[in-house]
Image (spheres, rainbow, N blue to C red):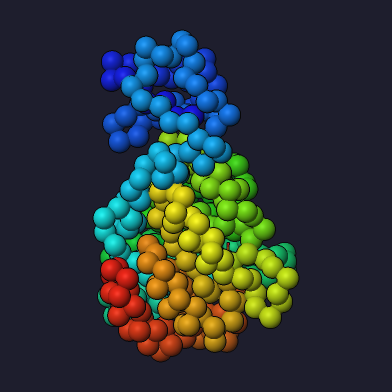
Length: 332
Ligand code: PEP
Ligand code: MN
């Protein structure tokens, strides 16, 4: 249940009431809210004279639910807004991993030349083998910050564990929580304590309800700036790396107020399929895309098979603009 407290209730009293009622107290758009489990269906007697408004839910999709807020949230990625009334489809692009100064500089130059705003690049890579390239760590974060300063780009990178959240906040504009980390409560709780935007990826074995509940950890902890990212789920199919769940995207659009970004690169796992898949994503009227691009995919230190080369990516981008226009969006 979500309870909006009356304006006369002070912040200190709201905290006290939250502790008494096993609730979270947050400030959302100037409103003081108490959030408790969806199993609570009635305003407790002790809160009745302090309640302005309340919402009852069938399940724990609460702050993220369209029943709480009809309009999609507006979230700022550095100097670019998505969601809300913007109708922006942001194209976030860059290599799977930051590998060297030269390599990430070439990515930044490409984005700049195409009029794009937001560069991705992994520094802490959650690899499935300890013997694979694990990322440049802090050195990678410093390179991303350099790209931000030199090219005026927003930068996004992934946290692999909760101890990295502070550092990632210091060097980048958006925190990415990877598919394998979706259930990591240490990371989710650390991200709840900041106001930095969080791009939360769906675990590849997670239901939509579990995905939204992971987002609720961040929202109920006080960070309203959460964006969901569908990046493919594991099915019986082995011909492609994962299966991009576009039905799931339709469900999320209907039931949640969070902006939605799609990652066709990790879903497909094979570069040849990424352009068509990306066009299908844009046709759904989404808030953004995450696409892996590398100056020379063949020698990439991670996810070599799925990264687009610069020419393919540039050509793809041109084909996206009319599709976005057809569904009332614009590529930014
Ligand atoms: C990535 O974005 O490079 C990545 C590791 O993605 P995911 O968490 O979706 O596997
Ligand atoms: Mn990758």
